[in-house]
Image (cartoon, rainbow, N blue to C red; front, top):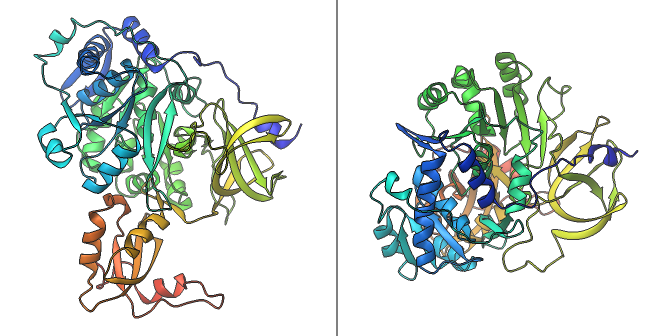
Length: 521
């Protein structure tokens, strides 16, 4: 048996013929009095959450929402957010998470690309002022309380496993964000029969990611489709003292942390995670020194590194961290999770152990394709003969190689895509908007590490006018891009140094201009 055949024996039974609507409503009936959602001092049972979602769904259906529609959701982390997501699914529609902090231009572009004409929000007046062409719909209006909502039964809408459940937008190299639709079946594949963590009736999972970030898919639907409890982090930004309190007070058993946040916790407050049964972490390449500290503090059976692009529904591989890799070697991204297949390919040829190639993924977790390109079978989605079977695959653009034991080691990107605090950023998209700035003659964007091991974007700019300033450049970017895509530092240069091959000399730029020096803003 080939190494690829061996690692791709991942088939597991899962409810592949059910929608998220049916799966949740089944839990709501079976575990009606169990706690579904905790937020600050509010505790909603499955009965109450289902009733709240049904009440919102009834209003959406009355407003004309139908199967196949897309509904924007712009609600702060709260029980109403979870109810809003459920309500959209109960209507047979797809939810599109959007963030009120995004610039107006990006909000409009995302809503237009998704064909979204209605937004559920908790600050609808402000949304209506910013988006006059959109119908805004309050997630709270018409509700006298949770008990009143119990009058509404489950909608009879027919929803299939291949219908679209939600759409996430990722950074795009052309300067435009790319919409990634995800099917109901793909979410079920992610959370049922999970190899990377034990999930069940007793699971208490922290939801701390922005709902527009695909990690939220695991954090929300992992517990709520098993009869477990979803604990909502009570603030927009993580503070370590608050994180420690929430995890301890609510008895959280399972948590996902981006690599950068994981490193910060390990450095500054490792005891915050002492009571957590399983700690998942991923989003960027791991720091071996931080992983070593974590192993020493938590032991070998609680840490799991996870990896996966949005196009494959959150997680695609997992690696239980039981020991550190040999010196000079990166931590593996691991083997494919349940009902997922992975191939390492070089020029359409499967690589042997030790050979570097591109990581390709297959299985029911794959998105049907980017919005506007769903019929496109070209790059990065394609149909190929892989190891004796006909597969629809996704080319990740990530490089890696197989170890003899079947684990894959990440070796960087084929393109200019990077991960910053767990968010995927196409450097080309940031560069595109910098190049549209009339005060910028030339620009170069890269990623560098902070002293704590995190990653930040840094831009180098050759001004086109004397009055070009770092703060003004960042200010103009903030009108076009979300905060996580704005370089932490902008440095003004007389010219961009080049290597002997004519490429921008990144090493020289970083050595001359300290990433957080006085010329940044």
